[in-house]
Image (cartoon, rainbow, N blue to C red; front, side, top):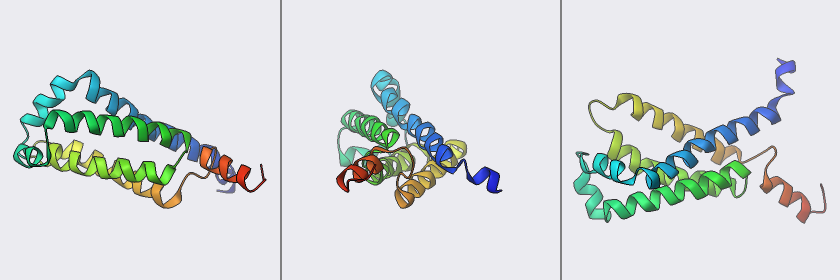
Amino acid sequence: MQELAKHTRLTELVFRVSFSLIFIVGGLGHFARHAWMLERLEASPWLGWVVMIGSPSLLLWLSGAVMIVAGVTLLLGLHTRLSALALFLTLVPITLVMHIAPDHMGPLLKNVAILGGLLHIFVRDAESFSLDRYLAGRETGMR
């Protein structure tokens, strides 16, 4: 096990980078496939709740923007906890509205796992190869 432990820093980086791609690609989909996603949203049994919050189209644009920006900052390890929190708060309503349906158990559980990963990142912060750590080191004069 000690042999594996020496790779912890690298695996943290691989986890953060691969995990962030879920949000960057998904957020880009909110723009590139906006009409299709809007149709899916309008077919949701929870559409009435969405409309009470705001325009479904506008909410798709906003959630896409949050996913891209926070996904990129998560990728870079910049404001990592804030990025994880923003993604968590964006993903919860998406999960509730889009995946609480009889035929969506797979996507629901996928999103639950992703929410768990975001919680993990929020608690642990970006340890290795992150701009947060680099900038903190520069402020204290350490590199």
